[in-house]
Length: 153
Image (cartoon, rainbow, N blue to C red; front, side, top):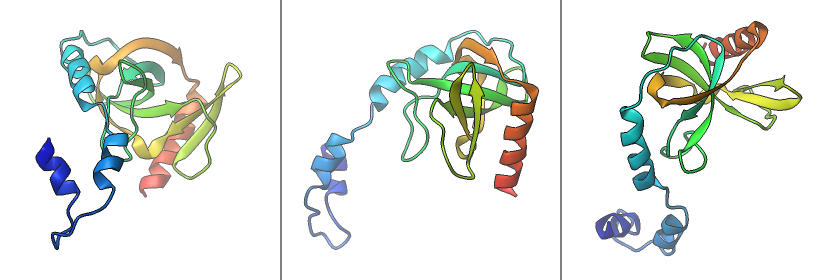
């Protein structure tokens, strides 16, 4: 660990970067805690899921600007946008805050704003899914799919 801190605190020319180690320690991610949860997640049964369903999903503690889960189990809601197999789906992480930008799709669920974070969509093993939350309406799923295709085109 000390080697990483030293490497992060030194420029290419060998001169020290003041404050980098302190900043790194302040923003330290919980990778060790996530690794314990991930090991337990790997042994879970796979639920049967359908397109349009929303689940609490253990998305984990991720690198850089990738969307993280929250709490002890590193969870966040994920909408199943496509199924690749019984084991793997294409999921869109969700947030409960209305967002602006071409990489978000906003909708309402029971009076609560929800935004699909389409630029963070990815393949997900269904063992990461904990609890079924709700079935998104077909028009919401189609709108998210349409915006995703536009984003990558």
